Amino acid sequence: MLTVTRLSLEDARLLIKGAIEKAVEISVPMCIAVTDESGQLIAFERMDGGKITSSIIAQDKAFTAAGAKRTTESYGVASQPGSPAYGINSAIGGRLMTVAGGLPVIFNGEVVGAIGVSSGTPAQDTECAQAGIDYLLRAQ
Image (cartoon, rainbow, N blue to C red; front, side):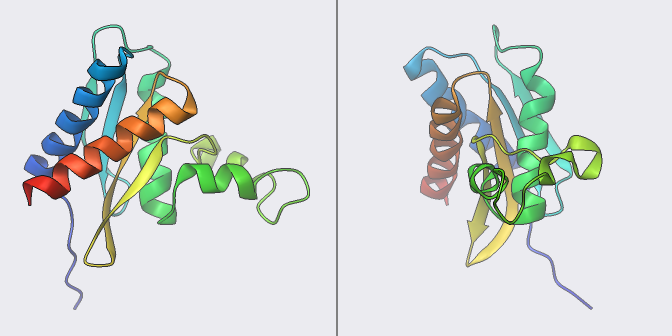
């Protein structure tokens, strides 16, 4: 038997709250998705003004970060022509994201879920995702 540690709905809400606070601070309305460790959606919020196309992108960023146990930005680097993972973005029906803004949530050295943020620049998305993680960790 395996024991799995994963984010709760309350944890997901805290991640979203932290990401929203940063999004408001930088004046960029975001779409924010939180998944469990297997990439399954726990919670999602599209701020007023968040890009409609970013709803799916945020969810796929979280899916990728959870399933791959790495940042989506790292896939962006590894998937460039000539790199070892070139073309991986077409895998799994195109769900693997190679744009920054998806971060795994790590607790006690284990990936317990992920957050994906989209609507700003890749740097803004990552900043908001990290703010969500920081907020959750402060609440623990």
